[in-house]
Length: 145
Image (tube, rainbow, N blue to C red; front, side):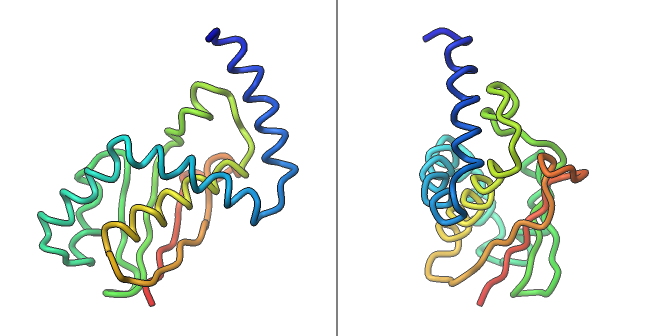
């Protein structure tokens, strides 16, 4: 497939994302997020989980060891933040998709990875700031119930 076609197609994809309601966008991008996470990110997080023997505070404190990510403990055992200093989404960096609505994919990825790593835990992921929204970094808040 030719790169020009993909870039042109992605322009249409971006317009479609902008027209979708929040629930529909979330349903679409959760599948994109899972595919992306399954390509390697998930395994890195699972390895770190084993290294810290399942200690959630240690896990988020040591997240920066994975590279291009930082974790913060906000309320021990309950609330965390995960931060990315740059957008590494290929749909943005290589495909030119620039809508902040694409960041729902990152939120879905964090949710999927966290639910997989912390099996049986109920949690929420909230978008605080993203680069595509004009922020200095991408920040997401993770709340465990």
